[in-house]
Length: 615
Image 1 (cartoon, one colour):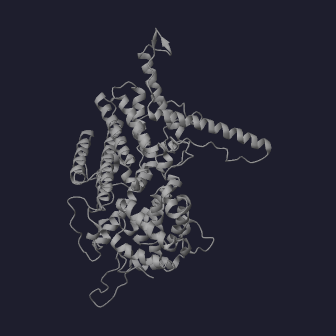
Image 2: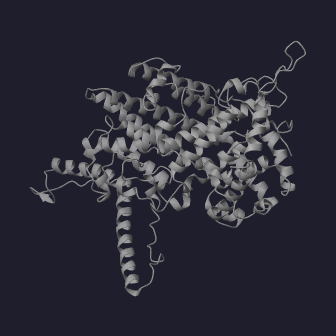
């Protein structure tokens, strides 16, 4: 049915630009170029180009057959409410639930936008659960089940004419779909798709308060939440591909989502409800919005994207001291406005506390490196210690999140934000100053994060994990060089050389967890590669194709450590320098464990490249 003016579905309301006075005062009705008339003309002129992104349909698909059973529909809906909705808040449970239940009763007769949203919910709900849970609830692997629902979501989006649609449900479905395909998609490709999604959102006007303010309170708030969710996902993917393409900019004025409960928002409301002084259901979404609203107006962020935008940013203060003071203010506001009222025993509150503190630590870290890259003077010891402290804080916050079993349903979002630059900064510092007073603490904090993220990876079941990531050896080389520098320094202190010298036993320090696991993983990769080569040679001699059944079984301890490098499971390295980490010398591919980190111009010369390609 036509939902363009459906009062039951506020998401279908497009900007009402056609409400004009047709009378010129003399009884004449002048010709007016109405936006809706232009849209209708486009629809008549162009049949359909929805296959631009999803390819041409070759067979007719019965969408009803792709829906899960009614019992599974409700299970997926509950998983969504538990694991996804508290973090994103892009749907309104009181109004959507009744529509969802009605649609589940007859999956052969669902409006296309709602059907796309349902499949999107199936997809993102599955992404948030463990493999074991998927087998238990649905009797199949997560990958297999997800693949079917992703196909259904693509078909439903095509039916919704998503590229030309102004329907919020359709755009929300697209966001859920893109989030669900992230683990198996090259971030460069995903960035392109997100660019299309953001352009659709801009056409709908959800990025501007001039359009949002025309909507009722419920619709306006959902539009704001959707815009912020799109922007923050795009920002994360841009950090992996080309940071300058991100849309976390001061060029739009969409407000931060309100700190209110869903039941405080109703379609008939013309004005927004009072904001909670303490926590609400939207606490996490509001906090994310406020912290990133601050960031998009800061020079240390804009200098890496487009310094010209500093002229329109709300925060005009310049210089590292001014920026540092503003970050002090941000931290105080976040703690007092949001975190002081949180109960750490509440999973959503715990997630909010440590995500917020991680955001602040990351902002301080970026600001510190930004200031260092602008300065021509050598860093003082005090400045260097600040950088190390911010990097350590990033890892500590991430470890808190990864080690907390209470928020296992929220880990799908935590997995996406691996603090890789903190590791790079720390190992670079430890290689140059291996015996610094807090070196042991640095190795302990890195090892704790390594343990929380990657030990027993099969049981943690990171959906972002890829078993064939080529970046591990590069990262391993950096880490091992830093530890080797420490071993060499300790050897010199204890008499130099090796073995027993001068009748005294040389002190040998026990390697930290991160080193022992990296070495185990490297040895496994070496033996696995050797066995594969031998099998390939034998099969070639026999004239038979290579077999994949001879691959060694991966060690349990750190089986997924290769995802350490890519921050979420994407393998997209480009030897020309436009890949995940371009400041790695091109010749390092020939000897990935042995490249010289002296050629890593970090952070002064290549911090912009680091932000632009590998964060």
